[in-house]
Structure formats: structure tokens, C-alpha cells
Length: 81
Image 1 (cartoon, one colour):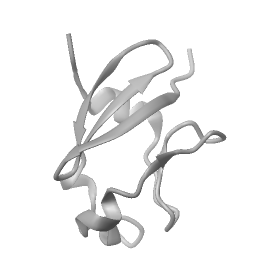
Image 2 (cartoon, one colour):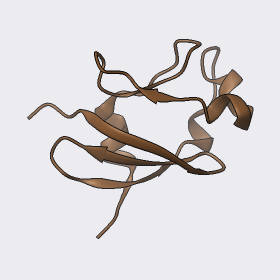
Image 3 (tube, helix red, strand yellow):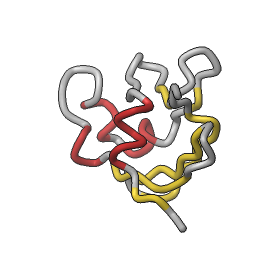
């Protein structure tokens, strides 16, 4: 099964709540992942908060071109019961 982010909401700091196409949902803290040319601008929380779920890529993206693979997000999120 291919994983796709269906919904995402900003929670706090660098934490995002995610729901996937298989029904799994949870939180992921991306603070430690914001390094490198495309991710460094996201260290500004005002910029970080402006993500969206791209309907084509089916993952979270930012206007500067940053995105995370759905598989990475899924494997690293804390699943909620």
C-alpha cells in the first residue's frame, strides 16, 4: 500500500498531527529535521506553520519547495490510540 497524508494540522512548536490513507494518525515533531538549504527557513515557526497537504504529492509541503516523504512521516510519528 502506498502511504498518503490525507490531513495535517499544526499543534505546537514543530509538532504536526497527521492522518494517513490507511487510517493511522499521530503526531510528529520535526524540529530535529530542519537542517539543510530547503529546511533551514522552516526553523522560523511562522514559516513552519504555513504547510499544507499537497493534493498531487499527498504529503505536507511548504511554499519554498520543502516537503517530507509520507513514508518518513509515517515511520517517525507517534501513533495515537
